[in-house]
Amino acid sequence: MKLDCKDKSILFSHTEIPDIFFTEYLSCASGDFIKIYLCLMFLSKYDKDIKIADLSKRLNIPFNVIQAGLTFWEKNGVITKKPTGYILNNLQELELHKSYTPNLTLTPEAIQNNASNQYRAKAIESINNQYFQGIMSPSWYSDIDLWFKKYEFDEQVMVSLFDYCFSKSALHKNYVQTVAEAWSKNNIKTFNDLENYFQKHDSMNKIKKAIAKKLGRYTAFTEFEEEYIEKWILEYGYNLDVITIALKKTTSKANPTFDYFDKLLTDWHDRKLKTADEIQAFLSDFRNQNKNIKELEKKTNYNNYTQRKYDNLNNLYANSN
Image (cartoon, rainbow, N blue to C red; front, side):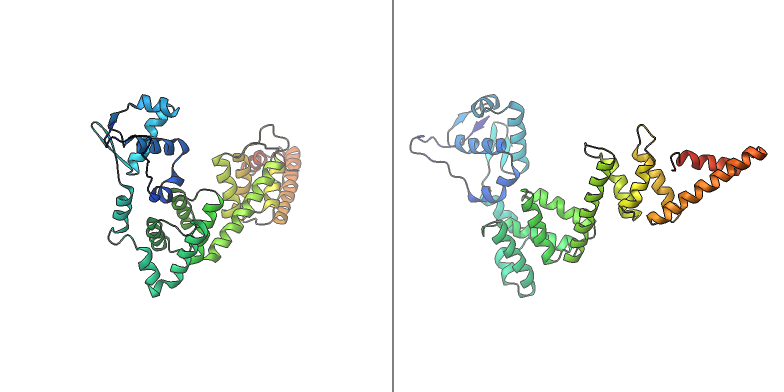
């Protein structure tokens, strides 16, 4: 590929990197991709051809990673592919264009000067100072304003969103957007909603860890097992005491499955059994009735639909002690 530019002496030349690169692109690119961009910026000053294979050797980066890096920067608009190579786009012009797209953005000054958005302006300024050291890129202002409108978060939730992503060392737009989508799907709009969400999340994690310990499980739960547990807790409203009863009923099974646990807990839920005491009472009553039926069978050779029904329950409650 060919990178067009004027010839300069390396000894006295320097490579300028626009500040917008650090505020907009640095956090979302991998180390290898950053190396590729910096090398392209350097080479763009010299009117010479360079092949991808040569670039791979020069940077000691695998050929396929070089290709992936070029694709990444092209998708982000940083470079443009042409028949003879690539053009390095002006990042400042790109950001200027984004900032002045009609109906999608507000400049920092517009937000700060809007009296009706004073609380929102304070929240955005807090985000700027706490997480961007006071040099947040203009496009972040646009995105934050868009997220306020799209998700209807209050100011505390928006600040908490950035705080959460910052704590995960993932303060880049794709991740922030993903978390915002997840919070919105959980009907989070106010700070009270967010606190309730975190409480449920923490409680669920504790129950998951307790289940893993009781099962002697040292590997992570699969996605489907996680869905089962979330259903028992969020949909059925069961706590660890109830789930433990189901876990204990697999002590005689060699390879208990979550499908079996789910059948037990779903049966209790369908019977409107809510607490551990109610479930224990049901199991005790079932054992007594089953015992009586077996005794009746011995005396009268009893074998009808009722017996078949209890046989099915016996299959479910194989270990009902």
